[in-house]
Image 1: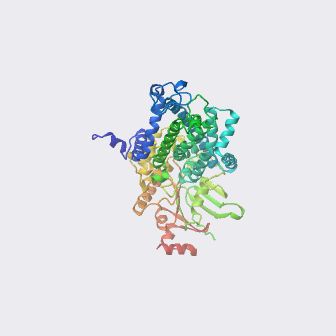
Image 2: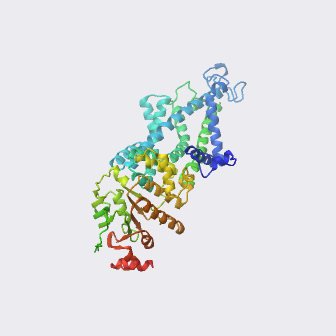
Image 3: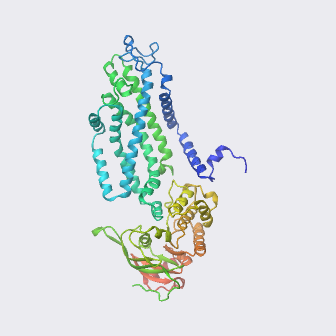
Length: 302
Length: 257
């Protein structure tokens, strides 16, 4: 066989094994994703965020909890404190770096709970139909009918303040749209010939939902989740701001803004720096979501 | 008015349909797609169903396979009456090839996955060897094995769909306009492939088409349908000789010349 470069091997039209076909399909997706500059910027920011969160103890110049009341509310560029210090003299940069961990924690938990619940509810309801569909969709309607933040507030108030409870509250309010999307997709997929074809092989409902419907729903859900991540981070920050999310002295970004609010006119950087961090990460998720939509959405692809 | 041919075919009946009604919707919205269809297909025979779109030809196939759940009447496959809930053995006996090869393959499953899963569902063990054999049977080489549907042409996709239908080694193959979505040169290839496969595997075909020349090429007998009713059942020899008795079939013949 002639010498073959890695690139040719990845882009071949005639894969030679199961793994080869998978790797090749993945590489082609990566190529079209890479062509989208804005999405690459988003991905870069998020990778940086992950690295920062992982290496927080090495990157942070100070202990995020160490108070220094003699040096409180130091301005931007103060000696040893590039982003200044907050009302208790804690280094804002260090707190932002440690706060990245909390943000990622919230994002990961919500991304694990909400879309999975939504996917289950939506696909089961769409595929089974009948009264199952009616019951599940009315439950979804009930959750949809509440304003998101108010429902989250009620949950946190009932369960007690804290990050985990904030995550549960946000997830509980975030899944209904996913259930709706998954159900709508399932309804179109269900009546297609390839589902009829697998039914004719005697496949059961469980196999059809997990192996045939999920792979087609997941891509649009991933896109939707990344686009919603900005909103989720903001909701978590909002709960933190209201004192119902992360509790002091935890360096959660929303809680940091909340603390800085009292000095916003005289010491604007205390609230602005965590605000900028939230803004950057939300923007990065939006850019990534846009790029993923171009790659993953089968309707836009063909 | 249904004229039944007197001549009995040799051997047993593969498919017997008696007084089949299929409808969609309920009460006021009810649409009767098939009314009192009655015909039978002998083992090894190739039987055609022709008629304009909306005449209920495909619906008969969907009722046989259970994809159209609201039907009444008698359907017998291999002498065995079909129950409402079909047993797994039924799907080993009867398989279907769909009209549109662009819609009948899962966009995220490779050829290997499609055939492998089908074989797995029917309880075969030697899946790898069988996938290789199926691809050879339908004239696709091994290089197509790990491709995804978007890397295949229409004709190649239809070959994969035929391979999937052959995987459980069925006796009766239901063909729902298997070539109408393909262009003319590919149509001939697929029809020849189907004819060869029928010889090799001793299959019985029930083929739906709106194209009389396709049915004339592929089938031994045919039924003409109009508005959900079978108006005439005739031999292909009669079709070639333009000897139709019912005015509608005469009209169809005239139009196809």
